[in-house]
Amino acid sequence: MKKLRKKIIAGNWKMNKSTAEAQALAQEIVKELAGCSEADVVLCPPFTALKVVGDVISQTSIKLGAQNMHWEGEGAFTGEISASMLRDLYCWYVILGHSERRTCFGETDDHVNRKVKAALAATLLPIVCVGETLKEREAGQTEAVVKRQLEGGLAGLGAGELAKVVVAYEPVWAIGTGRTATPEQAQEVHAFIRKVLAGLASEEAAQTVRIQYGGSMKPANARDLLTQPDIDGGLIGGASLDARLFVEIVRQAM
Ligand code: PGA
Image (cartoon, rainbow, N blue to C red):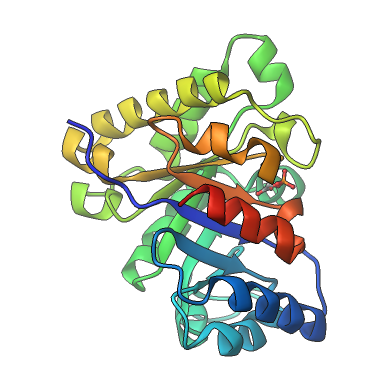
């Protein structure tokens, strides 16, 4: 039996926006969505804008998220930031293992796994990104790649911990390319992801986990994706930088 999962739409602002621009964007989003309770809304600005955006959304149902963190709690890790530092700024979520982190910064499934554990230990909710490249898809390796990323990234979690994780399926070929997976293509992988999660923990935990789709999600394609049985939300890059587009996608999730 499929349990009800509340949709979750997160904006991944990546390395964009000054503090003033971030504040203005958050204010525009708040104006439209402050009382929104039908879907969970998360804003993930760059580290430098977490404080200003956190202040703008503090009295609303919108939650703050970060885009990365280190697995250690503190110490000599120049340029890094810890889970407790993110909690200190009232972050609820943290995106982990984004394909840009994996490709540009050499993150491995083991790194992701350490980060997931550190995040959960600090009561931060991880949004764990998985997804295949075009070459892998064309070679028929989509399921093998996604399975390896899930089993590696989520290794050692109990069912209770796993149930707190959000998974984002982001086919690398769809990120920032304007080329979206069809709802059928996405649903097929989402259902597969849920099957892998059930194998990792339990069917019950797998039914609780929210699985977002990410990769060129826009108002025009959001509804068809979000009405698929195993698609529980979206991780939005480009369109999250425009308040009107982002708000429109959230409305499609309601
Ligand atoms: P996109 O990015 O919406 O610009 O494709 C999604 C992501 O990278 O999270």
